[in-house]
Amino acid sequence: MPRPPHASPQTLRLFEALLAEPARWRYGYDLSRETGLASGTLYPILMRLSTQQLLDTGWEASDEPGRPPRHTYRLTADGLVLARERLAAAASRKPGPAAAFVPGKA
Amino acid sequence: MRRVARAVLVAAVRGRRARGGPWGEAALAEFDQTTGGWEAVRWAAGGLRAVWHERRARTRTLPRGVRLQRAAVVAVLLMVPVAVVMNQFVLTPRYMPSGSMEPTLRVQDRFVVDKVGFRLTGIRHGDIVEFDSPREPGTLMLKRVIGLPGDTIECRTGRVYRDGTALDEPYVDSVASTNDCGAPVTVPDGELFVLGDHRLFSQDSRQLGTIPQDAVDGRLLARIWPLG
Image (cartoon, rainbow over the protein chains, first blue to last red):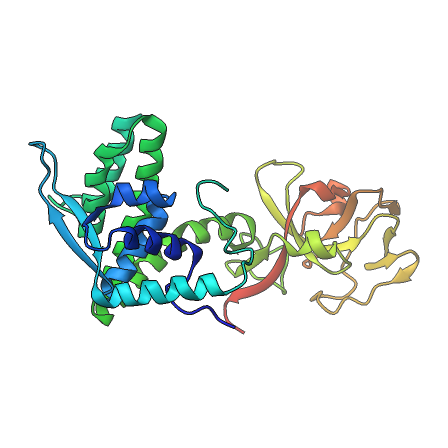
C-alpha cells in the first residue's frame, strides 16, 4: 500500500515537535535540534508543507542588531488537523521498521 | 571552518543577488545559532540541499520555453566533454593520407576507427586495423590483417597463401599482384601479418615484417566520406 503524503517518519517527528505548542512560532534551528533532522532534511519538508498551506511562515526581526531576521514556522489549522491525523494513524499501526527509526540517534 | 561553511552557504543562497530565496535565507539566518565548526558544516551542507530544492521548485514555475532553452544549453555543455572522451577512446574520424588501401579506401577518403570493438572481439582475418608505424613511431598506418599468430604466409606468382591455401581476395583491385613476400613467414604470438589492399604500392609486412598486436590502436568501422 503506498504511503499517504506527509507520513514519512521524518515528517511525523516534525509534526510531533510542532504540535507540542501549536500556537508558538518556531525557528528552523530549534526544530532541527528537537527532531534530530539535519537541515537538508528539515527544510525540504518545511517547504513542502508551506506550499500546501499546511504551514504558516513568518519573519521575525532578530533581537541582536546586525543579525538577519529569522524565519519562523507554525502549523495552520489544516496543518494541525493533518498532523494529528497522521500521528494517530502512525500510533495505531503496529510499530514497523520505519517507526523504529529515530534520526540523530540511529 | 565556520567562516568557510558560511561563505559557501552565502554563495549558494545568494549567488550574485543581494538576497536569495526565502528558504535559503532562512537556513542562512539560522546558521548563527550553530555552535562549533562541525555542526556549522553540517548545517551549511543541509542548507545547500534546501537551496537546491528551492531552486528546483522555482525552475518548475518558469515558462516552458525558458526551461527547454536551459536544458538545451546544459545538454550542449555536457556533450563537449563526452565528445572529447568518445573521440579519444571510442570512435575517431580519420583521413586517408595514402593510396595503399585502394580500392577499399582512396586517398582523401574519410573513415571512422573503432578503438574498442577489436579489444572485445579480438582481431580477425580480413579486419582493417590501424596501428603505430614500426618505422616512424607516432605515424598511424592502416592495413588489412592477413595472418594471425600461428599462420604461415607466403606469396607465389602474385597470390597470397595462408598455410598453403591461396586466399580469395575480392578486395584487391589487380589480381595476382602480390610480390616480394620473401621467404614464408610464420606469424609469432602477439604479432600480425598485414598487407595493404594496393599490393603494388603498399608498404606493409612484406617490408616491415610482422607488427606487434600491441601497436594496434583501432579497427576500421566504416567509410564516412564519400558516402555510399
